[in-house]
Image (tube, rainbow, N blue to C red):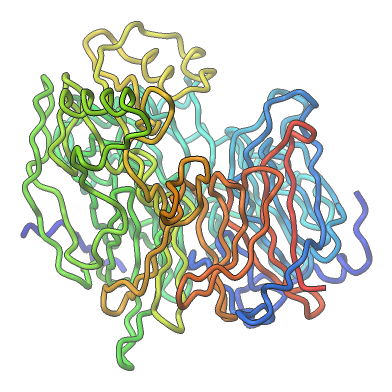
Length: 637
């Protein structure tokens, strides 16, 4: 097989209790700081060492408090919060769907302060949380709002004037074409390495968008300390994997899904997305490094250490959807530090943390070739032999649903008329069935890793897309591109008549009546042993009771949130369309407790301890009565 891993040898008012609580930030054994970082810790493990809640007592969980945000007007479209709150010494820090920041007493749910970064100007973008940093008595919350990185005083919520320009940094500065009007934001919070905050960014999946450079800023001053070009400039390694002039026009290859940091080794690990445009790459011939890569950099300097590309010349929007999980595998007493990367395709790539070499065999297999004019697809793609895929990668006519004869006939007609040759069937003028679709397989909630058992827990969607290739219709103004809220509309507006766009992307294939096109399960939760690559169990997660056949197993449902695993033997997970927050036995997947939330919780939960009591909390989306959404906490009385 071709070795695609490359290594370079550079190596309000605060309560008195809350005021006293605000101190020190390391991920130590301090049990009041076990979820002080997005996704639990710098390793993105979604693991908690707390064990007050157990398999035996989790059935006693009750609602403890609800914090209702109030930053949207009545009548507005309800927000879909994706925030994973962090908790530092009894204070919870969270962001809303409207990008406001909040400090909350984690024991009572009372607001300590709030900060509106928008100044009454428009609405915010979806984001997944905040970052905490401290040095002695200097304690800060670093957050994003639209195209700004902002530093707040963690005690008061007020901007820190010495950071950047009166507390803000414009993230457009330093990107290509910074003098133009374009869209950039942060979806996931940055990671801390010493006095640096390291960030990726979100850019549009359209023609003419900017590349998603990786950047590190000084947490004290806001000074830009280093930049890594994810679309390499001339003279930089990887430039040879593109057309020579592609760096001037191609965008994407961005880290929107988050990152992980190994402080001991001084390394930052990032999961990168596809190059733009997602579904046609005539202007980006080649493998397109560093798109779709697990990327390891020197956290202090931004220098390349190694990379592993999971998709060559992506034409399916198969971004890496979640941060790499830094895991230590214990195989009969031999410990190996590794990186586990889930993908939208349903693969888990398990790589040596220092070298990027795969711990399981990988084959470069031939895949279907593109017929689109001007396209030069990669003839092969990497397939890990273990673990087996956690998502469906192939369907036949027998897998099409039959909710009515008319609906079934329509699906069969579509199936027979479109191009479909399994995984990596390229976009085609006759249309293409894509499975897994653009929302996975794996999603941004990521995996949870239990160091005691080597088990990696992964939520997955079985959701195909249809790719319908058309030509662009018009060339928009820059303001058109920036203001459009729909990826499909933006892609169409930014494409010339001689460029191709996918007019049906980013949504699940359904029959004419709105039913899923393929048979259940439509969502699963898997437990995979990282030492052996074998499955401990897999279950449907979520249930569509209206579409469940009599006597059949639960249907499973799509969902983007990830699992949380604890030392108490539990998994907590939500995000499915039935609005349930569930507690499962991590050994078997057995349901132990559940509650119905007032709205979809499109967010990964967190668990923390205050005054010796363990809580589980989750961000919940908005409702008609409260479009801003809320945070709900649960505990045993």
